[in-house]
Amino acid sequence: MSGIPSSNPVAHGGGTHSSTPPARSENQSSSRTIDDRKLESRSRVLDLARDSWQILAVVGAFIISMLIVPVMLNVPVGDDWVYTRSVEILLQEGRVEILDLSVVTLIFQVFWGALFSLFFGTSFGSMRLSSTILFLLSGVAMYGICLEMGVRKARAALGAAIYLFNPLSYVLAFTFMTDPQFASLMVIATYFYVRGLQLERPSHRAIIIGSAFAAMAFLVRQQGLLIPLAVGLYLFTARRWRFDRAGIITALRVAGIPILIMAGYYLWLIFSHGTPEQQGAFVDTIRSTGWESTRLLTFRMTYMELAYMGFFAIPVTAATFWHFLSGARDAIDRKLAWLHFAVLFMIMIAGGMIAFASANRLWPFISQYLGLHGLGPQDLIGGRDQLIGNDVRRVFTYLIFASTALLVMTVFRRFRLGASPERATASLVASLTIWQIVGIMPPSFHFASWIVSVDRYLLPLLPFAIAFALWSVKDIKLSLPVAWIVTGFLAFYSIAGTRDFLIFQDATWDMGEEAIGLGVTYTQLDAGAGWDGYYLYDQGLESGIATQSPGGSPWWTDLFAKATNSSYIVTSGVPHGWGEETIMLRQEYSSWLHDSPQYIYLLRRPGIPGPP
Image (cartoon, rainbow, N blue to C red; front, side, top):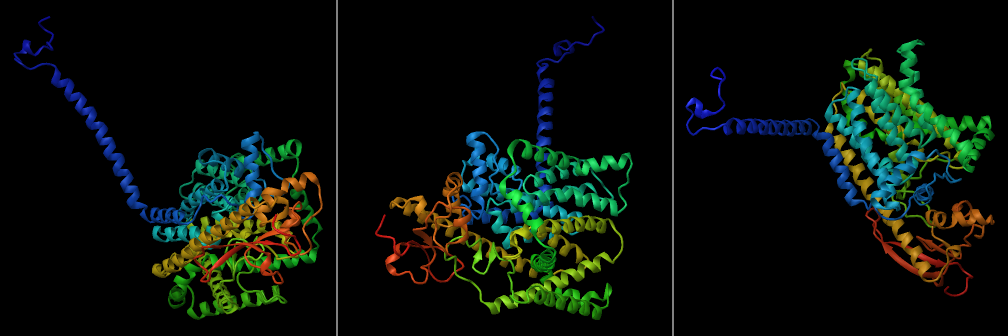
């Protein structure tokens, strides 16, 4: 044993020392390792925050705005009630039901809304929150798309802010409509496709994630299938895809999940659920439209799509206008730049005159959620007061034409500057843009002979217009203060307008509940499209009755609420010819954008005897 070193310190003359210190030293080393990892992790987070502070600031601003807008008000907007009913059926009865009024696929939205119901309860507010959160996530993806296109971080954060705070996207984000949910998923899918198909650093995983989000987008609106189609056609035309083993694998990565989801959905729809009535009527409407009407609709929509893309890009074009025209000689001749701009500007004016020769249309051309009265649809008798006059509209129309002309000119200029990885990415985004333009057409057929289309259908063009605007001027000096001032103005209008609209909706529903409390029955009351549809659609469908409201009643009583006789109406104004004796209740509501008091009324139709 004498040759074995003893662990007893006494045997080595260690005196009072023991074996404890080495063990304590090991524990201290382990503790230091954990502390080092914590410090390293904290350092990583701080580095990420410093590196991404611009987009974090934009996200923070959006979250703050959610504290101003009453997100959780339990009132529907537009067709919210239709989709909320599907969520309620899923949670209460355990089955997926797409109402006959639904033209869209809807499945993802129903389950996404149901998820939020588990945390916040089933209400119009929690449904609205599900859209808002998804939209906010897509704002981060918008930032990523700009970065992948070679846009610097400060400008990419600007792009995300323009996207998040544009009036059309912002007001729709505070609804449970399919449009914001589809657009959000489309943007996220676009980011992952763009990230995965980069020439210099491709990622198979990102492509598959992109295809999964494209499938989710399809499960909201049918045009989600156009996303992988656009990606595939880009790969084919760019000669990045061939019909071989590698090409088949790439095709499966790009489109395999969406195709499987589409096949499963239609098998379920046809053999289990049954095709909703309006989906069948939607196809019949397209088939019955003649060639001349289709040609006219295509021409008008092309004109308006260009105009709206100019509007979406206006913070960027405003910030680059003078810099581009004064400094363009390094890229193209300055005089040629002026000539191009003037020609494109006149084409926009001429196009508008031809497209709407008999209508004298000014901005906004296809108003529904972005209108003269503010934000949100006019789905109540009386609507809301107009905010701007025709002189202001005319000036704004010309500004939008100028923005469109500059956007088109800068994009064409940028594509002519030669091949690069960023231009390849821009080509992919261009393919996605073109196919989403195609996707706007089918739902517009429903409105072709009426109001042409509605502005919410153009929402998918918003992120692409912004991305192209920033990419096309990435080599040109951009006045960021001007861009942020314009974006800030749009953000203020978006927040105030959305807040006003939700308060207006809340006042409408409060008055409807007051009427019920006074003894008015649901079948006697018209309180707007959302109220009538939510409370009376099922009853009218089950009873199969004809429209009970008198002639001259609004469109929604015939479509949603055949059961009401409209003896009592909730309105924002007293119709011409109705005396003071018809007013049962009047309530003022708050509006930041209108400078005069705003009221909601409960009226009794003339000739209806006494209070209920």
